[in-house]
Length: 137
Image 1 (cartoon, helix red, strand yellow):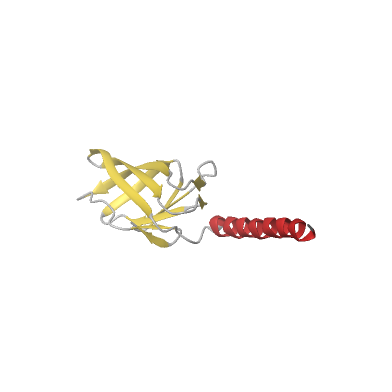
Image 2 (cartoon, one colour):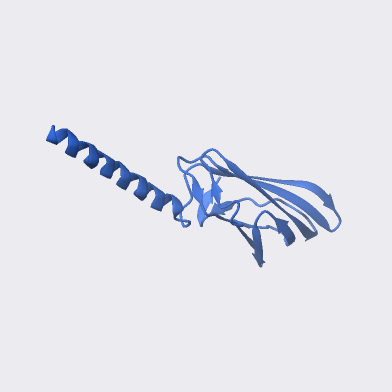
């Protein structure tokens, strides 16, 4: 009987350690989960502005706890203001970070964000995205 009593706490301790380790890995905002995806679409365009919506999907096996989405605008485009994220732009490179209330993206979940921008000449979509510094489809 003593062995059964010791086996149960040991199993709980191992399971508890496993959960803590998984929690630490999930909270690391420097890694992108396998299976992230981004949809980008211009929903309105006028000369010289546009509105774009993005949807960041988590198709990985764990929640994302803290995110930073990066992409380059390929022409002479500027982010003028955005929503559901903290937006910044340096040259062509745009970075949008979670706002706190949308910090966690559940496994299988998504976050919708968007911005108003300006353009000159042409308004092509971004061709590549990164999530927490790693390539995202």
